[in-house]
Amino acid sequence: MFYDIIRFGEQMNSEKKSLSIGFKSKVILAFFIFNAVVSSILSASAYHVLYKNMFEEIKGRAANITQLSSYLIDKPALKRLLDKMSHGLSEKKVIAVEQSDDFKRIMVQLNSIRDIEKGMIHYVYIIRPSGSGKDHRYVADADTYKDLEEAAANPQSDEEIARFNSDFDASPFPVFNEAVREKKTMVEKDFYYDPAYKENSFTAYAPIIDEATDTLLAVLCLDITDKNIDAALRESRNSSLAIIAGSLILSLIISVILGNIFARGILALDQVVQRYTQKDFSARSAVRTNDEIGRLGFSLNYMAETIQNYAARLENLLAAYSRFVPKNFLQFLNKESITDVQLGDQIQQEMTILFCDIRSFTTLSESMTPKENFNFLNSYLKRVGPTIRFYNGFIDKYIGDGIMALFPHEPDDAVMAAIEIMKKVDDYNRHRVSIGYQQIKIGIGIHTGLLMLGTIGEEERMDGSVISDAVNLCSRMEGLTKFYGSPIIISRETMKKLKDQGKYNIRFLDKVQVKGKNMPVFIYEVYNTEPTDIIEKKDMNKQALEQAIALYFERRLDEALNIFQPLQKDCPWDMLVQLYIKRCEKYKKEGIPDDWTGIEVLGSK
Image (cartoon, rainbow, N blue to C red; front, side):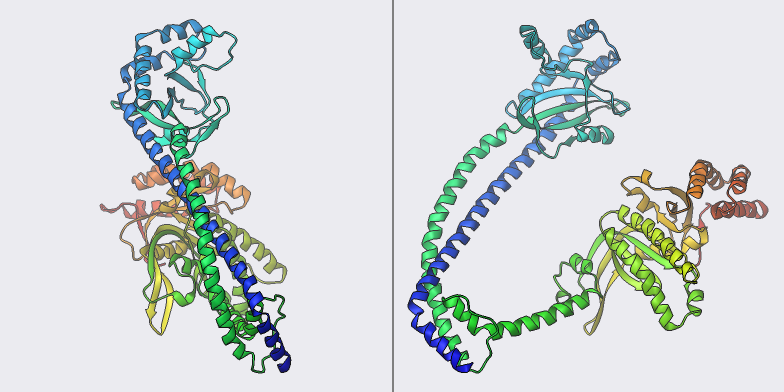
């Protein structure tokens, strides 16, 4: 084998000249392609950035114009027009309104608004939104008179005219509905292609508010076309093409120069590497090319193999670390691997925290051996962990039988994860019962707030941790699940930030002051995971329960009991009703202190 290597090296040296020419051509081609691609990407990126900046600027201008213009609309005239709107308005009455002084005044104002930016603003119109969200109507359109004249001149035309009191379908325009709901100026995010007029446009919406009553009268709408952007970018496109052509020529020249330089450098490096081939090393891969790359591949096989072995060991080590330090933790610290983490690295961010704990675990664990304890916990946790990750969360730490998980995106992720965890535990309990083990119960507390995520410790021993008052509060809330008999408890901060509260079964529990907190905490129960009959009962009694709790906080104990007691008969299993009845009876017997606020101070977790 050793002599075979020597003979292979001599053969390669005899072909050096022809091989160098082939390799040089490859280098030139590679550099040319690389430079051409980079030049094209840079030019295309510059064009894209220019387009985006121009579009954002036009959106900003459109929003400003629309908002300022909404203040200039003659509101008394507009209100008089709105008063004349009704279902089934006859054509004769519509014509009379369109010939009125109020309508003409509004039309003049709309056309004046369009004159501000004639090249940019295509259509200007006012819509009266309805309370139901389905019966929006046109009040006026800047083109109404012009469209009516064109329709009279061409009776065969079937073009729809936006006349006074005509219907406006807002279903394709969600931003319009959002502007009405939020009562603030909004602009659509992108252009919308209108097949009727064969052009791209977007719309800016500005609510017209009656300052005296702070009520929404109508919405001023401005349709903005993309003609200005296209005109401005046409010249940029031509310049980009010229730059790309010049870059290609320059790339070819540079590639030829670099090709010669790199070919000479690799030939020199090859002569050095050939000295390594004089040793008795076994070849690790076959050489399939007759150029310098083939020679280098043959010479560097041993080195590459060694590097690959070390890399594999390092990857395995990093993979093992990732099971102890969540990848999400590194991502939030903007670190690529555990080796980049330094003591004191930290970041502050609002997240939703979830604490999950097995109830009466100490009693349960006393009946098991240490091995059985670990097997039980791992069996339970392998059902919970994937659920948390599925809903975009990650487990920050295990605290005995408890879990602390963080959800950096939406509070809904945490609540959905909690509901799914409860379902997984139900499935797990059925499995445990089938093999002769007792069922387990868990409690989950969820809170949303600011927290500090970082590394603590010292140079020889550090750990990732989360420091926040929100974490402590969430832990206390998890402990309250036992007190209220509620599997899932969330804070008001979490509930307020849910995207759609209607998809969850939620009811108010209490105002409490937990250990370590000076301010009261409003807590709520999520009971989606209860049996169907209990969910129906809680939904049915929810309004009455909230009324009774409100009376309790107003010190009207007898009235509160008149509601609580029938609820107890109807739902004897409801611990919350029993809790408030006991409180009412206690304060009726002992009297209500003068400084009583109804807030329960809980001294333990």
